[in-house]
Length: 196
Ligand code: SAH
Ligand code: MG
Image (cartoon, rainbow, N blue to C red; front, side, top):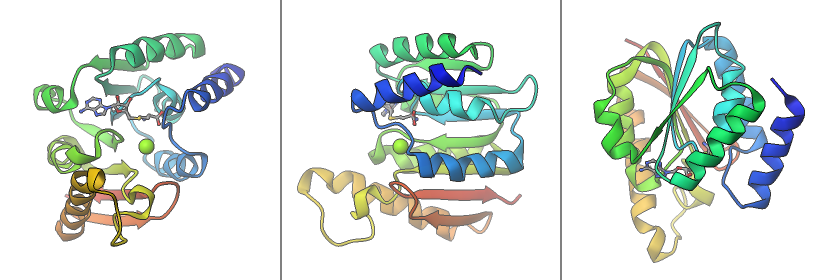
């Protein structure tokens, strides 16, 4: 992979205020991917393709990433970025709303990375549980949302997101088929291993 090009993509995304995966979060996810050696990854929330490009280097030979993005401009940027780095054979983008696309997917994944609309996390979890292989992991980024999820203060407009992120955490904690770690790295990361 072209590291120089990847660095450029990262810096452009940061300049454009696109909420790409934070360095410390990427380090943790990278360690998980190293262990799993994924063949298939599903990502919800492509943005400009930065995280998908980073994850692609952990795939086994002929492994694939499916990633979903609803913003047409970002899809175009992601395609361009993926081409620049030379990983277009490893990443497939579904353009559209994940709420509509996920129920149409019939594949099984080793890793599902949830990184899109916070108000939809419980729905994304339901779909991820259906599609994650035994021994695979479901990873949710931004799960602590600037500390609002565990604190008692947030603004009115953040209410739905906070409620749904709390619901996500409650669900993964209560599910006896999952082994979940909640980390304060970055904006908060939940890593749930699927046991059976
Ligand atoms: N994973 C990316 C960052 C994703 S930012 C990275 O780390 O590089 C979140 C993205 O999710 C945004 O681009 C937004 O347009 C997209 N998104 C939010 N809700 C969505 C939905 N319901 N369906 C598809 N994409 C969605
Ligand atoms: Mg994120």
